[in-house]
Length: 79
Image (cartoon, rainbow, N blue to C red; front, side):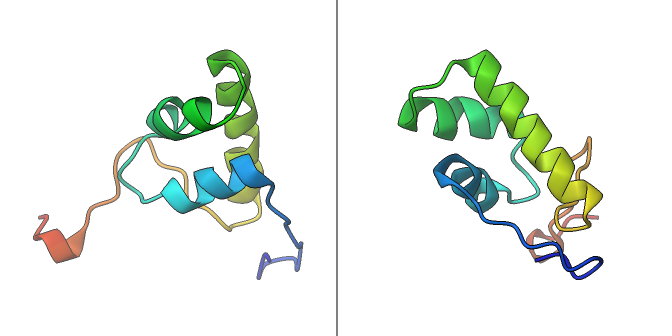
C-alpha cells in the first residue's frame, strides 16, 4: 500500500518474484533473466517490458526507489 496516496497493490506471482528480489543491488534485467524467465513461461522481451512497467508504477507511487546505480550498503562498509 502506498503511504502517499493509499493505493493498494496486489502482486501476482511474477510481481512477487520481482518484489522479493529487489535488493537495491541487483539490476532489474538480471532479476528478469535469472528469476522470472526460468520460473515462468514468458519471453525475455515480454518479461523485461512488463517488469519495467511494474517497477515504474511502484516508483510513481513512492513504493520502490529506482536507481541507475546500486544502492550503497552501509552494513558492508561502502564509502
